[in-house]
Amino acid sequence: MAEDCIFCKIVAGDIPIRQVYADDELLAFHDVSPQAPVHILVIPRKHISNMNEAAAADQPLLGAMLLRAAAIAKQQGLAESGYRLALNTGPDAGQSVFHIHLHILGGQRLEGRMG
Ligand code: AMP
Image 1 (cartoon, rainbow, N blue to C red):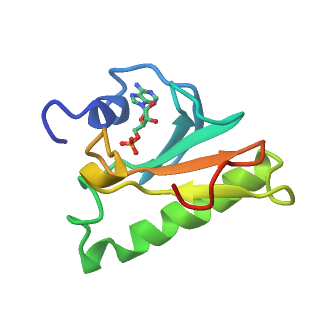
Image 2 (cartoon, rainbow, N blue to C red):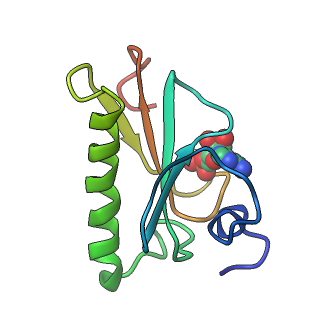
């Protein structure tokens, strides 16, 4: 747990969320400020700031995040219509919470292919 990390506080149960999924290594919940009809975040319970801090040992965890995101997208009815997975790292990507998280965005035609 990192001090002053809002997502570590969520993992600790100190901040309420609209939970979508939980297991012993991951949590998924609705983004508080949705940018699409479906906007869900998948986070590891372990604190990793962003991809710059991810290590080889985190490979299974990162893979689990991706596969869980796909399963959640399917549960949300997005498999056919499509969805975007986004993982922002650093200032140019607009990262605002420094605890790694995968955005699942869908439910409408998403503007732009990348940005
Ligand atoms: P990023 O800009 O990639 O760092 O994304 C951080 C995301 O976390 C933003 O989309 C925020 O709306 C979202 N967020 C921040 N605080 C909370 C919270 N307490 N519950 C749910 N989502 C949050």
